[in-house]
Length: 246
Image (cartoon, rainbow, N blue to C red; front, side):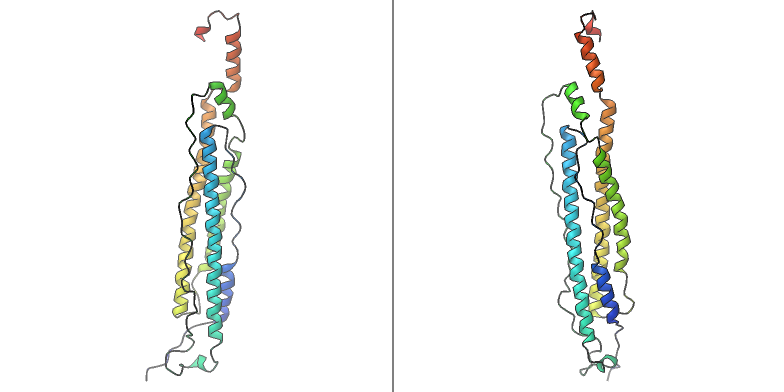
Protein backbone atom coordinates (compact mmCIF):
# COMPACT_ATOMS: atom_id res chain seq x y z
CA UNK A 1 0.00 0.00 0.00
CA UNK A 2 1.32 3.42 -0.86
CA UNK A 3 2.31 5.75 1.92
CA UNK A 4 -0.29 8.33 2.92
CA UNK A 5 0.38 11.93 1.94
CA UNK A 6 -0.70 15.05 3.67
CA UNK A 7 -1.76 18.36 2.27
CA UNK A 8 -0.52 21.48 4.01
CA UNK A 9 -3.66 23.52 4.45
CA UNK A 10 -4.94 26.11 6.89
CA UNK A 11 -8.55 27.05 6.04
CA UNK A 12 -8.36 30.12 8.27
CA UNK A 13 -5.45 31.45 6.20
CA UNK A 14 -7.43 30.91 3.01
CA UNK A 15 -10.44 32.80 4.39
CA UNK A 16 -8.27 35.65 5.65
CA UNK A 17 -6.50 35.93 2.32
CA UNK A 18 -9.84 35.91 0.48
CA UNK A 19 -10.90 38.94 2.50
CA UNK A 20 -7.60 40.63 1.69
CA UNK A 21 -7.82 39.85 -2.03
CA UNK A 22 -11.28 41.34 -2.49
CA UNK A 23 -10.62 44.42 -0.34
CA UNK A 24 -11.30 47.52 -2.45
CA UNK A 25 -8.41 49.39 -3.97
CA UNK A 26 -8.77 53.15 -3.72
CA UNK A 27 -10.96 54.66 -6.43
CA UNK A 28 -9.06 55.88 -9.49
CA UNK A 29 -8.89 59.61 -10.21
CA UNK A 30 -12.05 61.23 -11.50
CA UNK A 31 -13.05 64.66 -12.61
CA UNK A 32 -13.40 66.30 -15.99
CA UNK A 33 -10.49 66.79 -18.35
CA UNK A 34 -10.72 70.23 -19.92
CA UNK A 35 -8.98 71.39 -23.05
CA UNK A 36 -6.03 73.69 -22.45
CA UNK A 37 -7.58 76.21 -24.84
CA UNK A 38 -10.28 76.51 -27.48
CA UNK A 39 -8.20 75.46 -30.48
CA UNK A 40 -9.50 72.33 -32.22
CA UNK A 41 -6.46 70.07 -31.66
CA UNK A 42 -6.42 70.95 -27.94
CA UNK A 43 -10.11 70.09 -27.62
CA UNK A 44 -9.62 66.77 -29.45
CA UNK A 45 -6.62 65.91 -27.25
CA UNK A 46 -8.51 66.55 -24.03
CA UNK A 47 -11.45 64.50 -25.29
CA UNK A 48 -9.10 61.59 -25.98
CA UNK A 49 -7.66 61.83 -22.47
CA UNK A 50 -11.18 61.67 -21.03
CA UNK A 51 -11.99 58.56 -23.11
CA UNK A 52 -8.74 56.87 -22.06
CA UNK A 53 -9.42 57.59 -18.39
CA UNK A 54 -12.96 56.22 -18.69
CA UNK A 55 -11.62 53.00 -20.22
CA UNK A 56 -9.08 52.73 -17.40
CA UNK A 57 -11.80 53.10 -14.76
CA UNK A 58 -13.85 50.39 -16.50
CA UNK A 59 -10.83 48.03 -16.52
CA UNK A 60 -10.25 48.61 -12.82
CA UNK A 61 -13.93 48.01 -12.02
CA UNK A 62 -13.83 44.73 -13.94
CA UNK A 63 -10.66 43.80 -12.06
CA UNK A 64 -12.44 44.37 -8.75
CA UNK A 65 -15.24 42.05 -9.87
CA UNK A 66 -12.69 39.41 -10.88
CA UNK A 67 -11.08 39.65 -7.43
CA UNK A 68 -14.48 39.12 -5.81
CA UNK A 69 -14.98 35.94 -7.86
CA UNK A 70 -11.50 34.78 -6.88
CA UNK A 71 -12.21 35.47 -3.21
CA UNK A 72 -15.44 33.46 -3.38
CA UNK A 73 -13.57 30.58 -4.98
CA UNK A 74 -11.10 30.68 -2.08
CA UNK A 75 -13.90 30.68 0.50
CA UNK A 76 -15.54 27.73 -1.23
CA UNK A 77 -12.23 25.86 -1.08
CA UNK A 78 -11.78 26.66 2.62
CA UNK A 79 -15.33 25.50 3.35
CA UNK A 80 -14.70 22.23 1.52
CA UNK A 81 -11.62 21.58 3.66
CA UNK A 82 -13.51 22.37 6.85
CA UNK A 83 -16.27 19.93 5.91
CA UNK A 84 -13.88 17.01 5.75
CA UNK A 85 -14.32 14.66 8.66
CA UNK A 86 -11.88 15.52 11.43
CA UNK A 87 -10.64 11.96 11.60
CA UNK A 88 -10.01 11.85 7.86
CA UNK A 89 -7.98 15.04 8.15
CA UNK A 90 -5.10 13.09 9.68
CA UNK A 91 -5.05 10.07 7.39
CA UNK A 92 -5.79 9.00 3.84
CA UNK A 93 -9.38 8.88 2.66
CA UNK A 94 -11.02 5.49 2.44
CA UNK A 95 -9.97 5.12 -1.20
CA UNK A 96 -6.38 6.12 -0.54
CA UNK A 97 -6.61 9.27 -2.66
CA UNK A 98 -5.46 11.79 -0.13
CA UNK A 99 -6.65 13.62 2.90
CA UNK A 100 -7.64 17.19 3.01
CA UNK A 101 -8.05 17.19 -0.75
CA UNK A 102 -11.73 17.82 -1.43
CA UNK A 103 -12.96 18.35 -4.97
CA UNK A 104 -11.80 21.66 -6.39
CA UNK A 105 -14.75 24.07 -6.17
CA UNK A 106 -16.29 25.25 -9.38
CA UNK A 107 -15.00 28.52 -10.75
CA UNK A 108 -11.35 27.74 -11.34
CA UNK A 109 -11.61 29.69 -14.59
CA UNK A 110 -10.93 33.16 -13.22
CA UNK A 111 -10.27 35.37 -16.25
CA UNK A 112 -9.28 38.99 -15.95
CA UNK A 113 -10.90 41.64 -18.14
CA UNK A 114 -9.48 41.82 -21.64
CA UNK A 115 -7.83 45.09 -22.60
CA UNK A 116 -9.77 46.32 -25.60
CA UNK A 117 -8.92 49.30 -27.76
CA UNK A 118 -9.79 52.63 -26.17
CA UNK A 119 -12.39 54.60 -28.14
CA UNK A 120 -10.77 57.26 -30.27
CA UNK A 121 -11.91 60.85 -30.16
CA UNK A 122 -12.69 62.42 -33.53
CA UNK A 123 -9.76 64.37 -34.89
CA UNK A 124 -10.09 68.12 -35.04
CA UNK A 125 -11.77 68.87 -38.38
CA UNK A 126 -9.69 70.75 -40.91
CA UNK A 127 -10.61 74.39 -40.87
CA UNK A 128 -9.87 77.34 -43.07
CA UNK A 129 -7.07 79.68 -42.12
CA UNK A 130 -7.63 81.12 -38.67
CA UNK A 131 -6.72 84.75 -38.33
CA UNK A 132 -3.85 85.57 -36.02
CA UNK A 133 -6.10 87.51 -33.67
CA UNK A 134 -8.76 84.78 -33.45
CA UNK A 135 -6.04 82.17 -32.89
CA UNK A 136 -4.63 84.26 -30.04
CA UNK A 137 -8.09 84.61 -28.49
CA UNK A 138 -8.71 80.85 -28.68
CA UNK A 139 -5.21 80.04 -27.47
CA UNK A 140 -5.71 82.11 -24.34
CA UNK A 141 -9.08 80.70 -23.33
CA UNK A 142 -9.35 78.47 -20.22
CA UNK A 143 -8.17 76.40 -18.69
CA UNK A 144 -4.57 76.81 -19.84
CA UNK A 145 -3.55 73.23 -19.05
CA UNK A 146 -4.56 73.22 -15.38
CA UNK A 147 -6.75 70.10 -15.57
CA UNK A 148 -4.28 68.28 -17.83
CA UNK A 149 -1.50 68.88 -15.31
CA UNK A 150 -3.71 67.62 -12.48
CA UNK A 151 -4.77 64.63 -14.60
CA UNK A 152 -1.14 63.58 -15.14
CA UNK A 153 -0.24 64.09 -11.48
CA UNK A 154 -3.25 62.17 -10.15
CA UNK A 155 -2.80 59.15 -12.41
CA UNK A 156 0.93 58.97 -11.69
CA UNK A 157 0.16 59.09 -7.96
CA UNK A 158 -2.47 56.37 -8.38
CA UNK A 159 0.21 54.05 -9.69
CA UNK A 160 1.75 54.05 -6.21
CA UNK A 161 -1.61 52.98 -4.77
CA UNK A 162 -1.71 50.05 -7.18
CA UNK A 163 1.88 49.05 -6.39
CA UNK A 164 1.02 48.97 -2.69
CA UNK A 165 -1.92 46.64 -3.40
CA UNK A 166 0.19 43.93 -5.05
CA UNK A 167 1.19 42.39 -1.72
CA UNK A 168 -2.23 40.75 -1.46
CA UNK A 169 -1.13 38.35 -4.21
CA UNK A 170 1.84 36.90 -2.29
CA UNK A 171 2.35 33.13 -1.98
CA UNK A 172 0.45 31.08 0.59
CA UNK A 173 2.24 29.77 3.64
CA UNK A 174 0.00 26.76 4.38
CA UNK A 175 -1.88 25.66 1.31
CA UNK A 176 -1.02 23.22 -1.45
CA UNK A 177 -2.90 21.04 -3.86
CA UNK A 178 -4.94 21.54 -7.02
CA UNK A 179 -7.08 24.37 -5.68
CA UNK A 180 -4.02 26.15 -4.28
CA UNK A 181 -2.28 25.87 -7.64
CA UNK A 182 -5.31 27.37 -9.41
CA UNK A 183 -5.48 30.28 -6.97
CA UNK A 184 -1.74 30.94 -7.11
CA UNK A 185 -1.92 31.04 -10.90
CA UNK A 186 -4.78 33.53 -10.63
CA UNK A 187 -2.70 35.59 -8.19
CA UNK A 188 0.14 35.74 -10.71
CA UNK A 189 -2.27 36.80 -13.46
CA UNK A 190 -3.78 39.57 -11.32
CA UNK A 191 -0.36 40.87 -10.33
CA UNK A 192 0.90 40.88 -13.93
CA UNK A 193 -2.33 42.46 -15.18
CA UNK A 194 -2.16 45.30 -12.66
CA UNK A 195 1.45 45.95 -13.59
CA UNK A 196 0.46 46.16 -17.26
CA UNK A 197 -2.34 48.56 -16.37
CA UNK A 198 0.19 50.65 -14.43
CA UNK A 199 2.33 50.98 -17.55
CA UNK A 200 -0.71 52.07 -19.55
CA UNK A 201 -1.57 54.64 -16.91
CA UNK A 202 1.97 55.99 -17.05
CA UNK A 203 1.65 56.37 -20.82
CA UNK A 204 -1.69 58.12 -20.40
CA UNK A 205 -0.22 60.56 -17.87
CA UNK A 206 2.70 61.30 -20.21
CA UNK A 207 0.27 62.06 -23.02
CA UNK A 208 -1.60 64.52 -20.81
CA UNK A 209 1.67 66.18 -19.81
CA UNK A 210 2.63 66.37 -23.48
CA UNK A 211 -0.60 68.18 -24.32
CA UNK A 212 -0.05 70.65 -21.51
CA UNK A 213 3.55 71.32 -22.54
CA UNK A 214 2.59 71.71 -26.21
CA UNK A 215 0.02 74.31 -25.22
CA UNK A 216 2.53 76.38 -23.26
CA UNK A 217 5.02 76.10 -26.12
CA UNK A 218 2.37 77.44 -28.50
CA UNK A 219 1.61 80.29 -26.11
CA UNK A 220 5.28 81.27 -26.15
CA UNK A 221 5.53 81.10 -29.94
CA UNK A 222 2.34 82.96 -30.85
CA UNK A 223 1.93 86.74 -30.79
CA UNK A 224 0.00 87.87 -27.75
CA UNK A 225 -3.41 89.41 -28.08
CA UNK A 226 -1.98 92.64 -26.67
CA UNK A 227 0.71 92.71 -29.35
CA UNK A 228 -1.84 92.09 -32.08
CA UNK A 229 -4.15 94.80 -30.74
CA UNK A 230 -1.26 97.26 -30.59
CA UNK A 231 -0.34 96.47 -34.18
CA UNK A 232 -3.94 96.93 -35.30
CA UNK A 233 -4.06 100.32 -33.60
CA UNK A 234 -0.88 101.36 -35.36
CA UNK A 235 -2.22 100.21 -38.71
CA UNK A 236 -5.34 102.29 -38.21
CA UNK A 237 -3.42 105.37 -37.11
CA UNK A 238 -3.32 107.89 -39.99
CA UNK A 239 -0.22 109.45 -38.50
CA UNK A 240 1.84 106.39 -39.43
CA UNK A 241 2.89 107.16 -43.02
CA UNK A 242 4.43 103.88 -44.24
CA UNK A 243 2.41 100.99 -42.86
CA UNK A 244 3.94 98.52 -45.31
CA UNK A 245 7.17 98.61 -43.32
CA UNK A 246 5.45 97.34 -40.14
